[in-house]
Image (cartoon, rainbow, N blue to C red; front, side, top):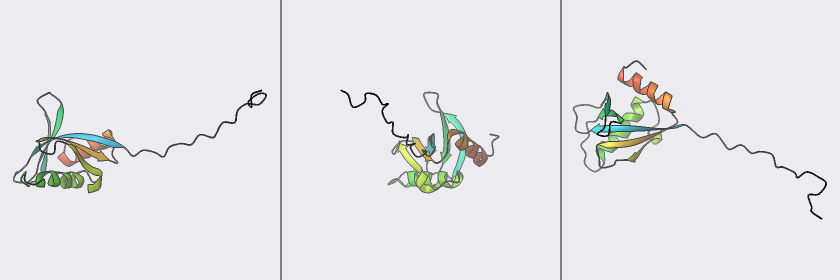
Length: 119
């Protein structure tokens, strides 16, 4: 005889996973060696995808421009430096940045505020 006969199986209570922090990916076209750090607005890459144009003063030597980009974006978007991560494009002008703690809508609103554009 089965141990389940006659009585319904006991089902363990559902354990909800902790909430996952929002995460956004931001494609960047970086211009190092500029006269100042600034966001120039949106452009398109060679495949026609939107990219955010960003200029930094740092030169592309020993990762200085990438570090300056992360620091500048953290300040411009009002997030911690540790929540801005260079995911792809370490030695390219086209980069993919991951912003932890912001969803897509929040990211777009902060970019609009940083560039002075209507969101």
